[in-house]
Image (cartoon, rainbow, N blue to C red):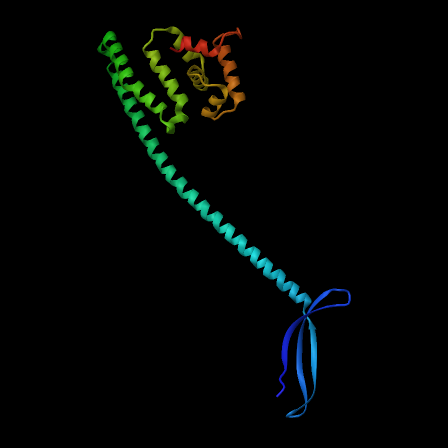
Length: 238
């Protein structure tokens, strides 16, 4: 028996345009076993095929984007996990530093309470303790890469401790004249750091560092521009 069938075809029109269509064919019977002819219908599906291809392309692009985004999120998660580990380690290091600073402060507090034991004995004890206990801790902290943000504070602390060991009036004058931030800048200049390095450590701009330099010169009455500020501070901040 003849059966109807459906299939897709492609053909080229007169203008050379490509078309796609669904052909549905069916036999026409004169009797059950006698086929007289066949009939076929053509349905233009060119537009539908175009849409179908666009949808497939869009789906593939979306799948690629999803894969890329998934990879990015995975990498970001790994970075976050690693950052969390580093933060925990940094927290541990900071707590350790704080403990060491606390121990140093406790040692200095003990010295302060014993000031009435005699000037000469006290001076010797202060000198020995600072040089044997405080200074090594400060130097250790300065060399610790996790403490670079405190480098200026440690330099100022060293200067204050050194001023306790000196009878020089000039050091006390500098402490009195300069602000806390200017003291940090002066201490870092004395250490040999340039304007860019000082700005990086103190989280300030180079312009701000230059302004502090100018104010330090003004307060210390260094009017002669030929006088090197670093050399001048080294002679005073011994």
